Image (cartoon, rainbow, N blue to C red; front, side):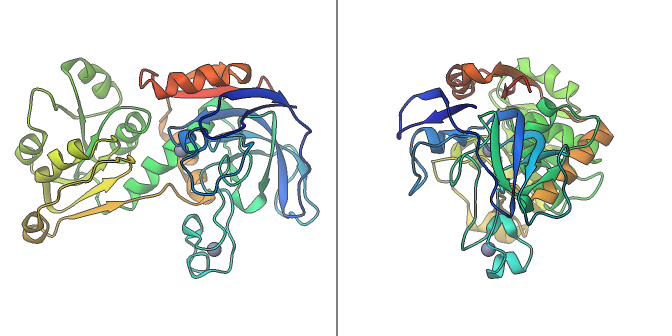
Length: 337
Ligand SMILES: [Zn+2]
Ligand SMILES: [Zn+2]
């Protein structure tokens, strides 16, 4: 099979021939149809994940079809359309797992493309516990980005405490944010998109935003306050400064939910938190069933990622495109299967 692998930290992404993997008893083999390139692929490419071993095939937004079953797998059959995301397996016996928080497994949390070979290949093997079922009406290329960007925005939003009609802001309209705005609007929130520049307003409104704040021309905190204060701000940008700048726009019980892996620290005034019972929290994607919920909601409401498609052979170019920040909006590899 063909696979796009990284042979060493900071090494090139190269398409090579490899043996088709065989599933262990609790795994299935997927024939990969589409594999999204996420910013977190850089953890593999640049060697930023502690202890990562090479060669490694990146890819944790994968959609395809079950091609072979391990001997102990129940509940799935060959031909089922499935996806796998950041949650790529778990130990099943640590306290987190026993509470159902599989993505937070403390013992053997597994991430496709980091702890084992991921989806930028024609085949991959995956623990059956990490599979999400893809609804009929979603194509593989539509499903793949929902397995990381989609579930991260949808699942964080539905657990953030906002009720229908509440003011919810999405900071940044990129790969995550363009999904976040759609999910927020379709879930019945008064949706505010915050981005840089007047030119993004038309897009934001097309995605469903009821309000648009141009953070270059306006003070986003003041504008949010003027709208009544946000119950939730989904921060999809990777700038700690931009996140800090919206904090003052949180309303009573307002929560800043951090999704973007910013390297800069956030500055959070203690009195701002205390005075309005405000909080700052993070959220890491979700379990496989959360990905399945994300796809079901997307099927029902028409939420879709806008994707640039590249064939697997052009994985290196596709990765550079994603890293350039110029992609509109997710970059997805296709195998032709
Ligand atoms: Zn990701
Ligand atoms: Zn565990």
